[in-house]
Length: 330
Image: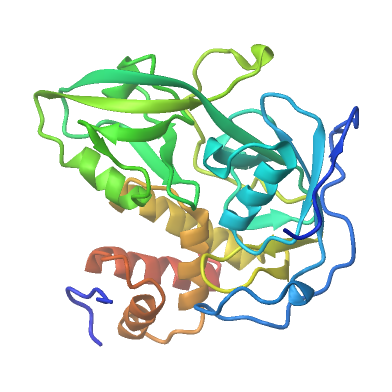
C-alpha cells in the first residue's frame, strides 16, 4: 500500500514483603534462571506460566515501603497487578514506575524494557488538583506520555512556556480531565492532540493527580527529562522486553544502532505528536529494520500499529532516521 491517508480500521505464588531489606546503589534486581521465551510475535495470547521468563524483580513504593518481590508478569498491566498484590493496593493506584531511583526522574521511566538487575519503584496517586490555565500561545509547552495501562501524564515542561508559568503543574502529574472530560483510558497521543486543539486566548481547566511524595522528596519542580543522551537504564547484561501484544521475552542489551535509532524516533514522536514513548519508538525501529523502502515500511506500520494515523512526513522522517542509524550517520 503506498503512502497516503492510511489507517487500519480495524494468583500464582503470592509475593512477600521483605522487611528491613536495604536497597543498595546497584540493587539486586532480578534473580532466578533466565529462560528465554521460545514464543514470539505480536497479537498472540500470553504464554503459559511455564513458558514465561523465570525472573524475580525487587520493588518498592517510591514514597517509601518495605521491599517486595514480584515475578510471572508478561506485560505492563500484569506488572502493575503484581506490584499492587505485593503491597495490598489497587492496580489503578499506580501512576507509573521508575527504574533504580525513587525520584520522579523521566530519564529513568519504565518503558518497554527492564534490565535484569533493575530495581522497580512504583509511584502511586497522591494529591488531586484542579487548575485553570489561560492559553496565551498556540503551544502549551507540554510533552505527554502514558503508563501503558490508560494513564497519560506529563513527561516534560518546556522552559518559558505557558504551562511553565503555572507552578502548581509538575512533571509526573497524571492528566485526569480536560475541561471536564475524563481522559483516563485515552492514549497519550490523543490527549496531546486534545491539548493542542484547545482554542488560543481562552481559559481551560485541567484536573491532575500528582504522584505521592515522601517528605524528603518535596523539592523544587523539575522541568522533566531532557532528551536522553547516552544514559542507559539497565545495568544487567540483558533486558526483559514487555510487549502490549504477545509475550515478554528476554533479550540482549540494545545494540548501538537500536539505541541511536530509538532515541531519534522518540525525538520525532515528540516533535510531530507531542509525546515521548520509547516502547512505541522501539517497535517502529523493529518494524523498519529490514524494510527496503518507505512504502513497505508504511504498510508494515499499518499492520503493526493500525490504531495510529501517522502523517506521511513523519513516516518518511522515521524511515530516514532508521536508515541513518544503520549507516552510523548520527
